[in-house]
Image 1: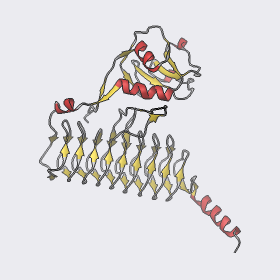
Image 2 (image 1 turned 45 degrees about the horizontal axis):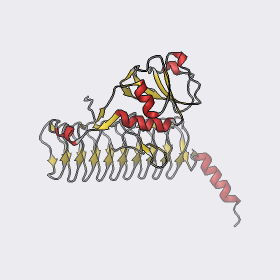
Image 3 (image 1 turned 60 degrees about the horizontal axis):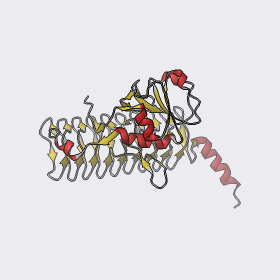
Image 4 (image 1 turned 90 degrees about the vertical axis):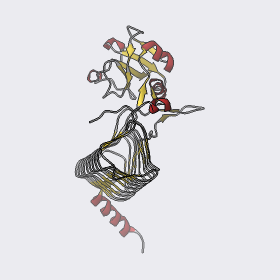
Length: 331
């Protein structure tokens, strides 16, 4: 599997440079300690900087990174051998620092990449399609009119891309079918509120779409901020679905039209949803869960649940309550 690069890392930076940039109080033994990268807690190595959004500190030893951005109220101590940068607003500091560490490829850099590579002659490559340098296609690609593919994207065999679809920052598996007018791999809705100008978070993540996925028309799948957005094998998505940044979806799921999944939600295998379902961010949906149309899921769900309503509850309990309330109405 190729591991393409979609953005530039502008590091390393010293702890003092970082602290001054985000206006942080620095607690460390060496202000010249070099930081190579900026990552989430589960991905950060010893030479990376990461962040704690909440006052989480009990399991700090499970995190490999030695350097943390935390709030002024966080009780973590530099006596643990960690480098601590205390700030008033962690979310704002993260947004600012992401744009210091990372930058998009310039047009000059993209033009210096090798031309797009096609394993074999395409079934169809429309003349109006734009395929940026560095992208790689397996055999039998079928690329319709108006398609735009950004730099360094990777596609497996037998991929079909519908008219006017835009794909960037993505790795696509074999036998994937993507409908018309989709937008895949653009930055997600991640920013810090700040007056008078909000601060966008640089999204360094990717969209990873595994084998045999099918995406309907007019769908939008955002790339991750610090993690990847992942669509599991053989998952089918109807028209007009939106998958936000950092979402992870398992295998063999089926989503009817107008599904909306908020950022960092994690969905298991064999999950089926009706139309117009909304799933809140930062929750876990178990395996083999069924969610009725127009339901709103706001909290984590165990395996094998069958849900209905907003807020979604057990389907049979919902129907029982509905019938009870219906009988209590006057004739």
